[in-house]
Image (tube, rainbow, N blue to C red; front, side):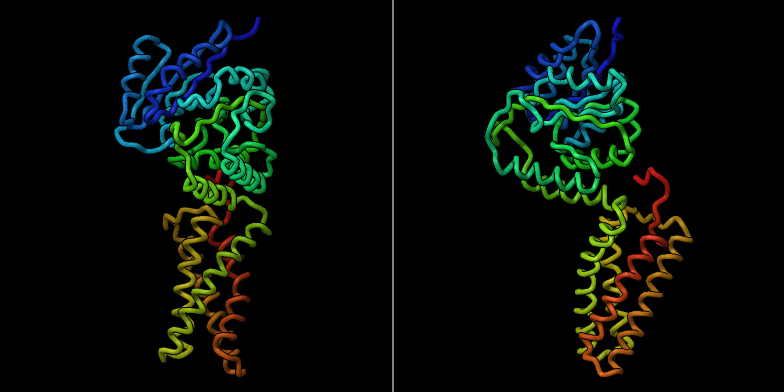
Length: 367
């Protein structure tokens, strides 16, 4: 006889009074003798009647729990709140806007119930099911973000941004989530990829809304998604890819280095003062961008060794930069040419020092 499982369904809700009741009714339809439901509605400080509707639904059904935020914090924050309260065997996400059909969840649960998967994602593109047709640029942007994510995670997903993600509860509760808005999607994909979990993908139906009908995601969320893909993946990327992006960051810092050096030099400070000052300013820019993107390391300065290693790298490469700049000028090179050569040759030293001395990866759970 098949075993009964419990699915905890997290419904983040923000101003969805028109669709919330119908959404919950459709979710309840998938419950049967082998699948029980725990529905957790997280109202993200709605300004309409969403919270009141959710509370009314909870009074009518003991399997519905309502949580609410005192201030609007975003979808990711609402999901974190819901995940913390989930007690089922499996945990899934259901948007309150009826773009996704809850009946598809039963299909997505099969690989989990069979013990074949740890995570199952529903793809809006890998399907022969009903699919509302519009928003070409939105779909194109989605495919681009999925491609970029796949390049870093080494997964072959077709729909990274899908709402329908179903997890074994032990998987999702063990992951520390940080993103408050739609950046949750690339963040969670990055982190499940880094754990080398068994990930499946299955086609689902999709009934997308227009922006006039209340769709909330916009171009700013797309930009944030790109940032999140880099933020949560680059620190685990192969060294060649890391160095490529570090080179881009280093190029920006190098331009700042050159600009500061020429400004100080032509102001009459001389090479011995201009080169160290310019290098220090550029190193700060380089460091901040590296912490934010490449090395994914939040400097808490709670380790004397970390502080010492960072200082040694900066001083060593800075000394090399000063010496080579001065050496090239003494040989007759123009100041700008001398600085460009010193900065370019110091780029590799900077990367190696930061990657292996200041920000080494420590274990498999670097998040």
